[in-house]
Image (cartoon, rainbow, N blue to C red; front, side, top):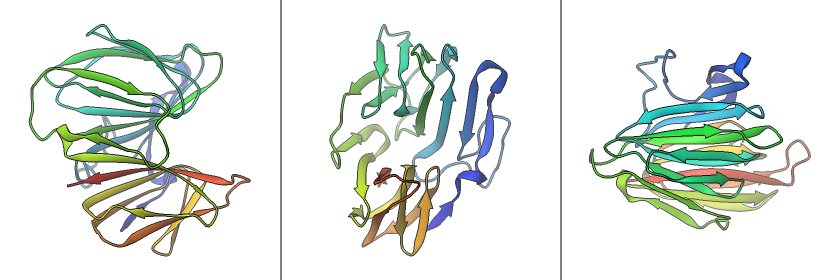
Length: 221
């Protein structure tokens, strides 16, 4: 298990434009040949957008993009005609396939924070695909078969435990609160990269007055 701390991430974005970004993997000008990917995961970016700010239309291709809103409202528009507002508890996926363009903005009244994860597809090409699952239930898995991956959203009260799926690769990102895994304590923004996960559990801890931790767990074959 390789633990990566929140303060080890690369800082990006454009603060003058109301955009603050924290990159867990090599990204853009923050090139690190030893931190290019883990399993199918190519990027895990924490984006913080001030009201009225966002990312103008830009392209993607051959990438599975999965977004989890931490707080606020994310407005999405893409070149295939989809437009939606994504909130906490929703799972958004954009399969960029052979190519798609999209816009991501904070058109809401308050600050917006979201976690965006990019996964490598098993095969390139195909047609773009978009969906939002609203209010996904705790521990309900969300499959991304194009990347051979499954996302598990878990919310743990202090002392509550959950199994980390046995898998060739498992990636655990702590959204809020704190957990203990294999003797290591992880707080918000921390992540664990686990190879050959077997019999591993995460236990919720009380942290900063929060009674519940929230985890995003990727199970990858």
